[in-house]
Image (cartoon, rainbow, N blue to C red; front, side, top):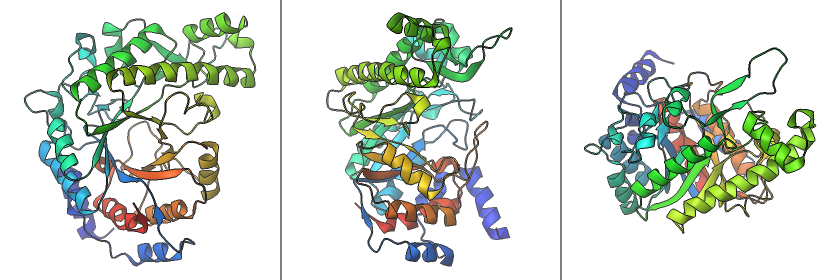
Length: 396
């Protein structure tokens, strides 16, 4: 990186990362041009959705998260580059980003208040701006999705009003205390389920505009949990001990159990917004309990698979896409080069972004519906510019 590039990078971080998004400058890097030219796809790929997912607070430079001006600049840049979907991540979690923790909208339910981020600009009624942004997006032909990370919550805050919520637990070991997964909660515990229902009710009630066309979420899954609630549920349904079950038996039961929970959750969402599309952030790995063949029956419209968050080969990427058939997928394409805390992120560069867009173009399957690039808050100016350059290779 040249001194000029380094200085621009540092200055952009100090102003807020979305300043780079708003610039929308074209790239002139010959390596990127070469990547685009050498893809085996002779024509661009037609997609339904191309856009950004951005944290309203998560990984933002400022403690208050994005400002109204940041958001409007982002929308202007998206419109210039014909992007048609903006997904708004509506919470941060201090486990991965110590500066931002909790909900970033004006929470109404008193039980949710301990989990509210009081520093968030958008979290205060007098400075809330996402409602205006949703309408401004509609004026630019951009649909809005609200996105939540179900069950990734601060345990100290959860205990205050949901004491019977339960963390995921690993298989117990003799003479050792239970090993929990920090910040990750299990849907079998009654308090966990109640909290998940309360938060989505509060969010979708506050943001009821018709241009909120979808709701996305991750992590309502099993993760091979051995917490007391899951062990009790397994015994009640099978008459057997979860501790004595084989991996195949646990995975088969988890798919049944998680399908039931997903259907209940989606039904609740549609009781608030009957016509809302629901997207699930999953890659349908065995330990998640998400059975690709059952997700449509659960009411899931699209999958948002983790894409290039972690080291992946081209063949592995294609196999993961095949595993998610017959569901239509919008890739959750991590283009970040600023790593979160406690997260082994695969760092991307303009060159690697170009290479992986080539992989997307070369994918022969029929279940690819779009790409959401994530997260401009955690991207250098050159990576942001690379995204705008590379989406020219798509049609939508």
